Image 1: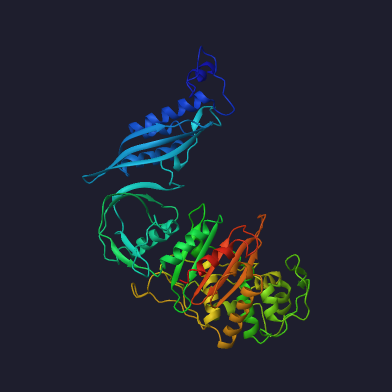
Image 2 (image 1 turned 30 degrees about the vertical axis):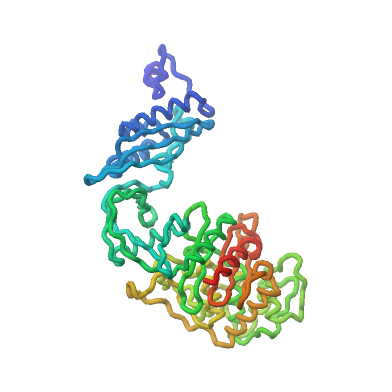
Length: 520
């Protein structure tokens, strides 16, 4: 039996009745070249099972490689390997997509890695969907067929076309708009090669158009000048997102993301907003008669709430005679913690302020694409205090915080939207909004913050009526806090978040300022 096993070993290593030794360590140069060549040859022939046998996940590989030919209708495959870098092999794929009497060339570049099989010791292709196409991720597949939805020509508020090429981070947004409004926009579907994402309900990602459909025209609220500025600004800082809205209407003027995961965190992100939350907390204090802009809000070095000690940023001087405007402008945490115990405030007061006045947290926003409505749960214990300064269980997106600023400076909640509700008859969310006196105080405190407080450096040089609020949010496991910033200039409000960007003015601040500078 020992000799038979050796002779039939999967590595083809049986020689002279002696069991082949299982190899270990990284594959050598020759093994990498040979394994990649065998895999490419089988793939070119359309032999999915054979190609999959040279990978470390033959079941998943065979499924996707089969779909490459049978469902994506990709033929005449020619793969040209490049120069290997250690165990990584880059390559170019040239092929044709043929469907319904239409045919077009397809070309792209990708790479694979050769690893040592854990049990067999064979050199194998480390299977990832990106081996087949660089834009494929887990559970994705390739399909060529008549489009599920007609193409759209999305245009901005000035009538100019919005494309992925001109505004790269709008890609997922445009795909989502097409998925939802393709039929309503009056177009006719074409034939396309697409990436289908069955695992996450995301719209198909088009890769190649074989037969053009007739695009329907979809007018959005996007301002091309603000969008261009947002695209450029987020590129300065990794993992950044920004949204701009028009406070007088709720129209979204810009949405941009610079993220490695392609996620629309600007609309769908869920993260603690740090001290930008103090806009809502200040509104709660004013509305409940606890204090006012010029009323007391002492700023000690520390504040204890139910056995938990809260501190201010390093270097902040205590000021027992501070007003709310002063503590807001300097972003004093302890001032807000000390005041949330005052009558008539309860565990639900911040939640009520966020929901009833600012329209947050009720899961009823209908922006035109998927979006998060914010979450300010009613909690007791340390999280009640943490929530007042944008930590704890409070969760927001840049879209939410841009809306908060818009509500704060106008007094009216106008639900943000990207596509007019008149197109599909959807009802926008409603909220009570703020009393005129509360809005006037919030606006003035944000003006002071932008000209004399923590936001002054980021907002420097901006003319017109300006205001802002900074924030930094600590996240468990991160070396640096997330940077948050929200501000306004005349009739444009914006908010940004940069993961591990540090203080609000360091990363998110310059992003917001760049967008505000366009004036919408």
